[in-house]
Length: 197
Image (cartoon, rainbow, N blue to C red; front, side, top):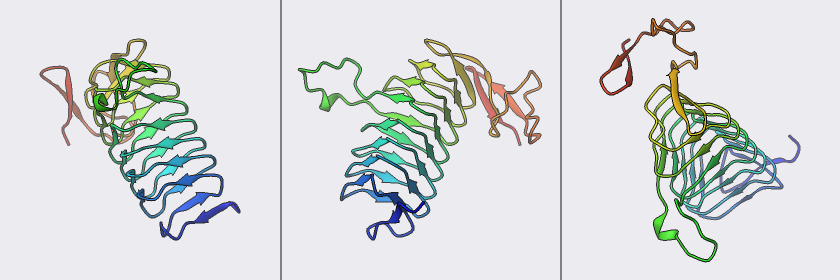
């Protein structure tokens, strides 16, 4: 950690000397930004986050408290992470539906809100304009092309719901009781899951 330093602009934040944080970014205490990262102006990162190697965040991206963003992740304008979101290595967010190199689409960026406690597996792709519910789990390599409900386990290309996950990250069986915590869940109308206790 010898090359991790506290930037006077961000008290209580450690930033590797190889990383750049543009003026106009806001970073909460306890956050660590590792090697070769770039945080762009207008980005707000919460407290106690870990930003892995070669991450790019911004501009105008919001990251909640306690998020873990693994290596090689880019969060573009339109992405909003709630608290405690996990972004696995090399997962991908888009912000334009129909990109062309010779056509400017900046006015067409779509938002992608990600709910509290969500987990996005390594190499998963999140197509912009869709929301990811709280505590959902997107499997490694999945391609999300529609909104994801709270607690959903999504796998495949395109991603389909294959079950439910608890807040503790345990796959729920037919009893809908988390084996780790004893929390009880119930299915509601419209293929939704709700926490009962």
